View (cartoon, helix red, strand yellow):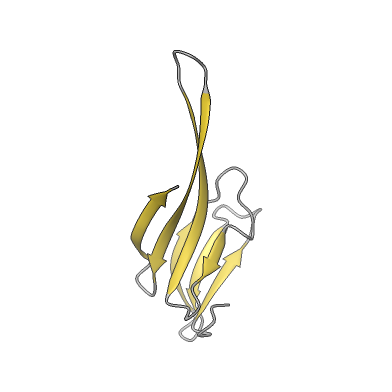
Length: 91
């Protein structure tokens, strides 16, 4: 449940789509988000006011020539209620 108590993030790892964002007051599905490898219930976090939902992500990139693998971590931020991505940054 978001801090503003307007939105709910449901996590159903066995469903076809693991993450669902709902408008709690209108009982309306806003967006469904697929699950990636190593994601769990802690993948998403609410902003302090509930107006944004952030997703932690990890991307593994392997160079074909050397076989070297690099891991990049980042954050995607979605604005509610539109669920449009505001930023996608890698660290």
